[in-house]
Image (cartoon, helix red, strand yellow):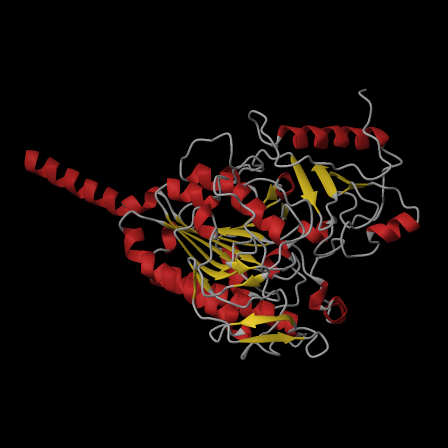
Length: 510
């Protein structure tokens, strides 16, 4: 009898251990961020999408799709800052615009990032792709000395390993850097003008012999698959990995290669999106083939809306809208500038085929991973992030009630529920009307929209709803001054933040 009891206890213990291996304590995490991909450019977030994206559709069918997800900014550098720090970008020293390929590092070593967070949870951390947050080239005056190592790259921001290029793929220098070491010295200058290639242009600058513009996208996915395979055994034995994979596509240069070139029947931009989708399928397959699928969280998103470089006119002729009916595009304060795809797939913890209208921001990924890895909230790190875990589990909200958006020109918008107040007379970015044009036309310096009734942001209610305008201005002021939009003690911003447009006064206390 005792033997039989011991036998069944042994079988139960063995079964339990097989069902909950030590590697399941924390999942492997892969965050993939496309570059200039609009919410309308993939089928999971746009049923009318005319670009075939079967692999991302399959990912959505096996995970959860956010339909009201936003970047903290409508351009590259500030969104990357926000995603990695869990903090709105405008709190940093970068008040507007983006960095170049030769800019110095933006994120100080002592600023908490996803790299630091995941290392603190025992992860091996890697960044592969487009950094665009600056690192410190060795310089002789303004000229880069490529014989010397790069300092203050992703390694000071918590990444054990990194491989990538400094700026956007149209920004020189075109050099691979492998954890501080240049892989090959530039031997010549290269560039393509817009006249030579309206889609595939890139600025002239130094280029290394191992840096092939057309092969950058597949090369980065190959490096990522290589990384997953290299870490698979350690992951199975209790040391999970965190991979941050910021893509250079479908940003310019738009350079699809066979068999994707001309495959869409639309234009090179659509071809490039199809190529990116294919590579995502390869990456997910690699995770499966490595035996890591059940306990790997894969997140796919974009850094802002589609750029006009995709050629909206041609896309429109084929019935395709990169902004899926929302107003504006990359750089703008309107929804098309910052509402983006966000898909999360985690087979053991997220029910497949789900979609949610929960308000989300990419700053939430910091707090989400903090929650998943069981780490305590700290005063700094994730100041503007809410955990998406409740939404993964089927809840309607993460607790996020507000969203502050930011345009390339430094214009702000604040959202609460369906109400959105844009502190700009126009787009704050590149679409019409730009700010100088809006001023010339005498347009109101602010715009108030009710997104439930007017998702395309066509009817400005600022004159009809002065009380709502004042309410939102006070709310914005509070969240700016607190240094955070989450509960907790107030913290300092890195600069004095001003958000009121010229000619607008802060409302008196009422």
